[in-house]
Image 1: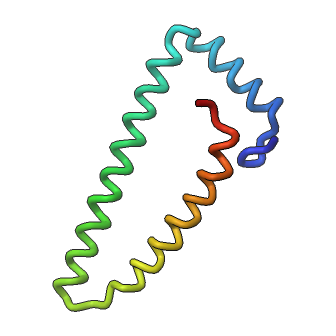
Image 2: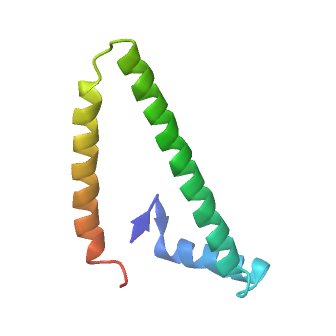
Length: 90
């Protein structure tokens, strides 16, 4: 298994170092903080996209191409979820 050019053994080593540095009891808090940060980043990105969309529509620019791109992105995400759904834990 490789993820971002990192093998399974390297991922295991990184996780081992993280546990040794922070301790097992701190890891859930760190993960929760990272999750909140990622959510805030995603929300901010969505807000920026909405503002750009509104501004483009006010200026009378054609924004239909973005709808096509978003449709393709949703399709790719769906395909990835289908593949990842069989791998992820429930």
